[in-house]
Amino acid sequence: MNRNEFLSRLRRGLEGLAPDYIHDVMHDYEAHFTDGLAQGRTEHEISHALGDPGRLARELKAEAGFRRWEADRTLGNMAGAVLALLGLAAVDVMLLLPVLGMLLGVFAGFAAASVGLVAFGFALLLGALIPGWALFGMTGSAALVLAAALAGIGLIATGTGLGALFWLLANIIKALVEYARLHFRLINTVTA
Image (tube, rainbow, N blue to C red; front, side):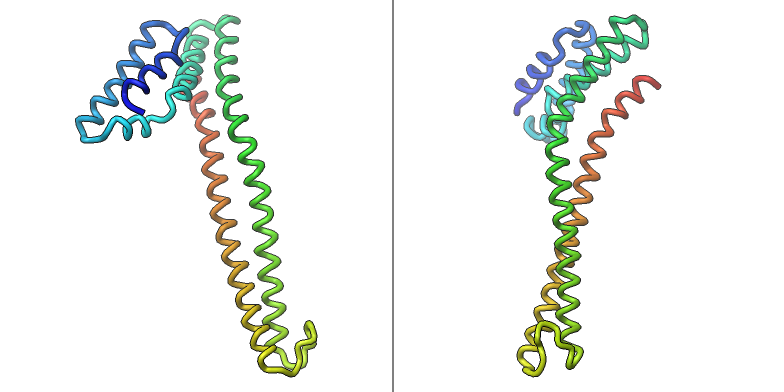
């Protein structure tokens, strides 16, 4: 998205706020583009770094609502702040809840699969290494014992790999939780 698209979407999102506030915000974001271009960045890189202008406008509206309520604690200002926050939270819930639910299911599936594969791999490996242990009828043939040992090692490696993916998904979920905490930080900075 180029500079003009970003700024026009941001301005449309800020409609309804005080004209002086909109002017200050627009001036700040125009300065971001001017400074970024002076540093050799493209308009697309700058707009990507700044984020979605619609979301940014909702956050700025919520912040302005809290500031207005802090300056003049009337019922109307409180309702405006709460509505702005609910609008911001509704978008988060619609976007984050399905993603978190899907990730939780995948998370549990990877955990169960990795534990099962490692356990079964160890059982196969022990059955191959302990002579005379009649696990799955494996006694006698050296080729069968070797195949069972290699299959056990392969299952252990596969389970360990799935465990690593499990760990990666845990970090993705942690990042999503940090994203959700940004809104609480917004509230804390305004009310502090």
